[in-house]
Image (cartoon, rainbow, N blue to C red; front, side):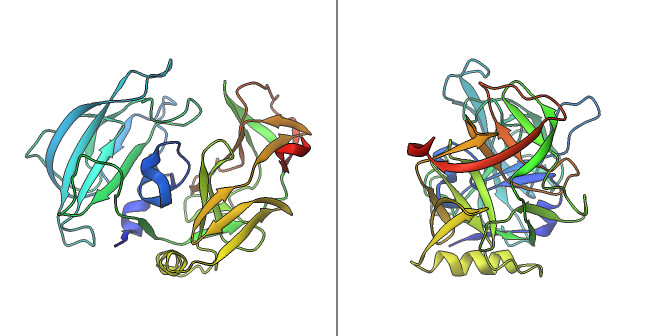
Length: 308
């Protein structure tokens, strides 16, 4: 049974993604990463709780060893309370060094602690809260088998022709000025697939991605309806971007083809695709082995790997 996150939850965050993660807990969109806004010092450290309830437990857990992150993470279990569609569920929160303890009552938006880096995500990923939901009959310590998550907020699909100028760079990424958010702060947007819906995920550097709300309707709750309908069908849909085939979606989950993303004709690691409402939204190129200059004009294509 799916869990719908209402707009009142998602609107507290600048960005979110159901599929843009290498962590298997995201398979099938059964977890969501929530990205708070950036603080004035340029670092995102605050961890506002997405749920109201009582902290059941906090514990330190092992994480995959990475040179940029410690070999541990933190798990916070919160028993969700009403009135809310989440009432009776247990929220599993990762990537937060807890400032709360068992028995503490938290309201939505209260700080859970400090966001931390962890080996569960790649070096180009910004700090975020990872959230999954377990039913009362499920082991709360396990990640696999968590409830699928639906979106109770509309996401506007933005057409993108695959071009843009570099406006920001990091050691492992570059951000383009397109597609530009038409109304920052007022709605969530994402990159539109050719036949509708928003593409979510790491293309192709993670195992798969998602096609969210393919009907593109904008009324509140439309995405929850669309995703429930998608999940109930066995129909396979070819997903493409600017005529370049990305893969095949069964329901809302995309299995990427064997493809390579190119920038100005040269291969890069891939594209980071997500939903956002902040003004800095734009195509994010994952390119740890290649440098781009600010202002550089870039054309992105997705090609069968055998042709690159």
